[in-house]
Image (cartoon, rainbow, N blue to C red; front, side, top):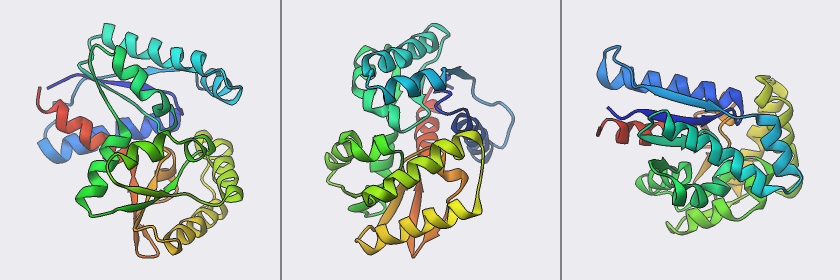
Length: 230
């Protein structure tokens, strides 16, 4: 079985989810305790976030490149970035990677197409929703994206960074996020992608008859499919 490398710490809370999901899915498939070897490089979240907020994208990229190189040197066969927003650098990282780097957006697109979803709502950080990298990547698969209103994007971003990245789960915030999902469905979304790896901590299942797509779990399933090929 291939060794799995995780670029984690973006945030630590979502990294915990990745580890948990990998082990749970392995147990479901194999019914034994011969778990895959998992190598985690947990980056400095504050430093990466500061670089992104201040527009120092080259420095933010090198945080991820350093992590990827460390995973390669540690013997990982395949790797993933345990977050959605840093996938803005995915193409750059993929070009220099010596091992397979698995995209969360590609994994999501494959699942959406399998379910017949052509219009998907996006819920994530302000950066993810305000920049075109996520929308453009899904558009290559023929999938249209619908995002919340600007003030709703600000609210989601605040809940993610002030609460979820710190492990705080608020029922009041859950209600606010559910309302935003409902409005995406009203705009025509056939499903809603939780395009932030912390959001599954607070939202899951269906809302207003629309399926919520847990990008963290979808990413894990794709990576394990490839890991089992080793």
